[in-house]
Amino acid sequence: MCNVPMVTSFRAIVELVSDNSRIFTGESLHLRCSIPDIHGSNWSVEWFRGSEKLPETGENFKLWNAKIKASGKFSCQGARKTMIGIIRTLQSVPVEIEVDGGWAILKPPSRSTLVGDTLKLSCRLRGFPPIHETILYKDGIEVMRQIGQNVSFYLSNVTLGDSGMYSCRVSWDVRRRTYSVTSVNTPVHILEVLSQPLLEIHADIKLYGAKKMKLICHVLYNARAPAPPVHYYFYKNNEQLGMAKSKNYDLVTKALGQYSCRVKVPQLDLVRRSKPSSFGDLPE
Image (cartoon, rainbow, N blue to C red; front, top):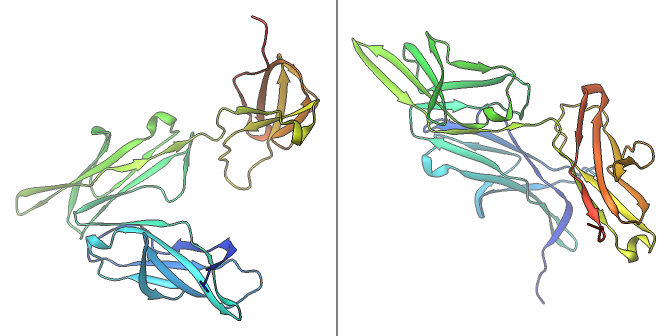
């Protein structure tokens, strides 16, 4: 009789406790795993780097005196013994840890950067040399230069065009000699608060009958919590179909036509509209 592993419906959560997911060789790092079990059962915790199961167990995982080879995607999973065998949670979404053997690291924001935000990028240096100049680069081109000890850069009111690969270069003088080090490239992604919607049409007779079809308005909404409500509007041949909806779908009468949707966030004064989608064979 083969033992089939039993897996719960909920997923473990791994959290980066340390400030940085990219660290220098020789530094330490702390991860924590939590199990979202509303019943408060006792779980043991297993740790993984990629598909490799690590010998460490327990809620906390600490990487000491890190080596470059320790880099990887770390995840955790809960397990507990029951009368019917060992039950495991779903494995957590991994956290990528990078161990850098260089002298400079560009630290990106800890949370997503949205259009209109101020982007902060900090150049972290191994040790504490007397820095006299720091330069920020985007896609290999100089963006900003600072004289003195300040190693943080602020780009205000960013747009989608500010996405790219960023790096920093730090210079300092010791005994009449100038030393310079450059970080590896770090990707920075700028997100729209509200993306352009995409309309999807479902006309399955088994699901909606012969006279109805479902319009679904897909959109990415990245507002900070607590996010204001979104209103959805649906159109046929540029004529609005009914009132605004709080859900991103609507059941409408099946008919030939050009359909589209509009998404509005009144409190943020944001409005985006989808491109039209045809249903049926329209006359040319």
